[in-house]
Length: 236
Image (cartoon, rainbow, N blue to C red; front, top):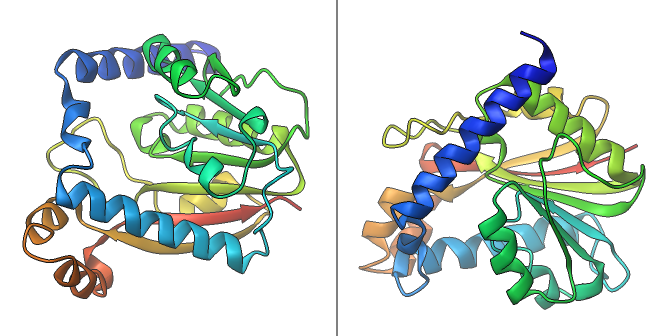
């Protein structure tokens, strides 16, 4: 099987998986009215802003930002609160239903249906390229590398890739494959990568947050209980 055929087959599997999640209304469980979801979102935002600040990236007013796998645009919209302009936001997702929802949510952003292995923009188009829990949905090393290559191609020299994804397998979700620190660095070979473990294990967070956010903070101090990697990757 050629690389192109393998990528096409894996892309179709991903489409089928997410369509089942939509049909089964699994995305409803991420409502911020649930204390655990609220805690995870708030703490993730703290971690992202801290990492951006450490890289000297605090003025986003002129930054062109692309999110690969933007879903319904909810996390893409976070960049507005952090100082970006909606007209400078671009989102790409395989699911037409997600892009339709994102267009209603972010009418001035550029939102298109497509895969991360064929980003329809010229070289050096973006200041920041983002992926959040996209790579762990891919069970094909070739497709992972193809998407990483496209993210790098469309990123300006000196630009940043913001990465957030699972570092552990999810025993309740067989459609998730973790990405370790070593693989992140191999995917973006030659780049300066800062990687840190974040996010208290979601099942534990959902239980602990019902009692106390302070309890979540204490548990999150234990490195083994943090299930994701947050990385900031700078292109030479």
